[in-house]
Each structure stands twice: as C-alpha cells, then as structure tokens.
Image 1 (cartoon, rainbow, N blue to C red):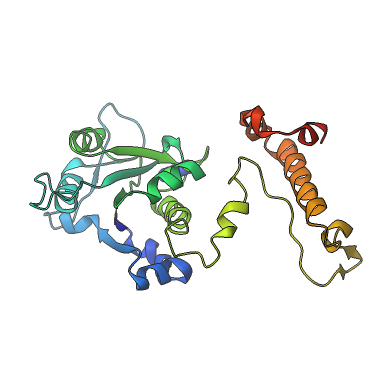
Image 2: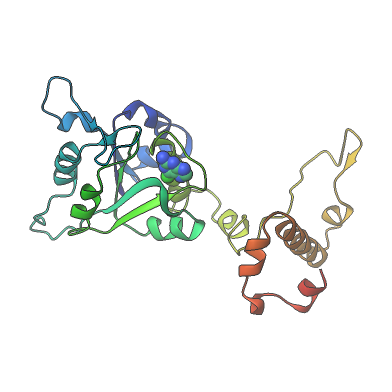
Amino acid sequence: MRVDVVSIFPEYLAPLDLSLIGRARAAGTLRLAVHDLRSWTHDVHRTVDDTPYGGGPGMVMRPEPWGEALDALAPAELAPDGVTLPRLLVPSPAGEPFTQAMAHELAAESHLLFACGRYEGIDQRVLDHAATRMRVTEVSLGDYVLFGGEVAVLVILEAVTRLLPGVLGNAGSLDEESHAHGLLEAPMYTKPATWRGHEVPEVLRSGDHGRIARWRRDEALTRTAARRPDLLAALDPASLDKRDRAA
Ligand code: 6GU
C-alpha cells in the first residue's frame, strides 16, 4: 500500500518510523511518504493560512498550497498504465466516525492520501475540488477536538497497517480481538496464577476448552453491556445463542 501524508508539521509523523509500522515500511508492505505543505507555497513567509470569510476566531488554511499538493500527489491526468487515484482522507472532528470497519475498508485500498488540517480547518473548496476526481472522506476519531489531523493519522495508520497481510505475526489475534465480532474482548491473564493475592479465574486453568470459550463469551457480553450498550444494541440478534441471552 502507498500512503502520502501532507502536514505543516512533518516531524509530528516521526513515530511512523518505529515499531511494527516501521517494520512494514522497511519490508515494503507500506510505502509511506510525509510531505511538508509549505513546500507548495511561493511567498517568503510560506503562508498557509488566513482569516475566515464571514468572521469568527482562528485561521483557515488557504486553498492554493493544498491545490498544488493534491495536484502533485494525485495527478488529474491518469498515468498511461491507468494507476488509480488515491483515496483522500481528511481528519476532522466534523468527519464520519473512524471504526474498525473503516480500517478494514482502508486496508483494501492501494493508495491513501492524508491531508492534515490545522487551525479551524482547510478551505472547503479544496475538498469540493478534490471530490471531482477522487474519493474524499472526512474522518473523525471521536467527539473531542484535537489541534490538528496529525495524531489522527497516526491512529488511523496504526489501525490500518496491522490489517495488511504479513504485518501481524499471528493473524489469529485479528479474529479474537475487541471489535472483531462487535463485542469488547474478555480480560486476559498470564503467569503467575496468583499475584498480590489476586487469582487467575479457575476456569482458565481448567484446560476445558468448551468452558473457557463459554466463559470468555460471557465476559465479553457483560463487559460490552456495561461499557458499550450501543455496541450490544447494534448486534445482529441472530448472532446470539440461547446461553448468550441468559448471560
Ligand atoms: Cl480526526 N481531527 C481533529 N482535528 N480533531 C479531532 C479528530 C480529528 N477526531 C476527533 N477530534
């Protein structure tokens, strides 16, 4: 997968060199480039923002540098080999919620392009113009406000990269984890069996795989009911068995 990120703070994306994402980059699974928006400015002050039309506090990102950046990274004329245009993602608290389902959708793309806004956001015409030639999605991490899109890109790329083939050592861990089946994951334990007076639940040490699976399912259901009743309500009733309903 190819990924381009445009930001006025490229250093904010430095963690993408680390850990499993860094390894995916080294292996070529992830071809990632971070670009400085100011390289597409032409004035001595390398200006990227201005005051909002209609008034109000803060600054808005001017359209010209963004237009040039998107032209460079997603050329309007398709190359002779017909390479497809990237999917443009714009982190914004006004976007659609980022979910595990969206992470799966993005992991199937061949080219992602992230436009990181700062201040009060990017001039809307940049997104409107981009939408005439590529798929544009404004995406939000949740109902709170960040300074800019850079940290959201770190979150989204971590969620997406771990779904790429060959990135996770144990693909089974993708199936068991929280959100894989619309439920939160059951608690996990390792050795020692007793620690500071707290015991590992007996069932997990029983070796009875049927009982263990049932216990984990019950814990996942009770946790989800307590912490995320919205997830429980969204479950397909057909995915619940009789013993689930009792739990
Ligand atoms: Cl994706 N961006 C910004 N700037 N703030 C946010 C957000 C994204 N998601 C939640 N708050």
